[in-house]
Length: 295
View 1 (tube, helix red, strand yellow):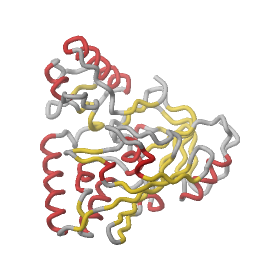
View 2: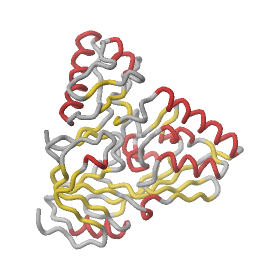
View 3: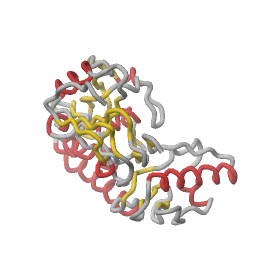
View 4: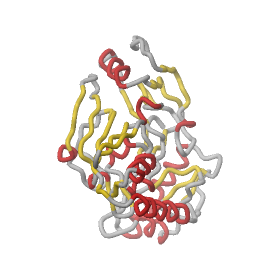
């Protein structure tokens, strides 16, 4: 790939992506761009050849990078320029690179309730916006006010909550938007009470999910009227090895890289389970984890 714009941030060729993902698998990016700030990001997008493909990547907690790597440019919003969190009144403003849990903590410290569930989501705000991230009965759509980012042409686009058309783990916002910042509204509450609820969520997650493993969060969306973990469990896949991958004994909707898994092992395991569950129950499991790149 040639003719890439000059930038102030980092622009790396043929860069390994596995270290940036929770599964620690996958091939390299043709190019990896880590912008210095939002102006650097806009400049890059405006001057990028039209045929170049772009893919944003957060902390890689909900992603399988395939073994053949990712063509085009992967953009990672890292560092203080994209991770800031501020509170003014009932509004919490967070950069797209901020960890969901950090936003939950900032809201709690300010005595604002409603964002406690973000303490249980191991991703960034950019990913949360894209997939209406949620857990324990709450979702991004419940607290989001607005967000802005740049489209593929580097034009700033602002979206109000209604513009997202949120449904379960899905947004109708254009897929080419690279989110930069979001604003949420919390509800005034006692700070210690909010922190207590967050602590309960964190404790529940630590005892029910394999968070110390090389995992990727929930593998499948919950089908209407069903729990994915129950379907996986009842089909006999809890703890069953597929190459170097398996579904966790602790939570059977969480895949684990046992140490030597490839991306193909992980994706193959997921597809094998989908096929088996469909044959046994007639229920089609849908991936919640994003699979990206070339096999």
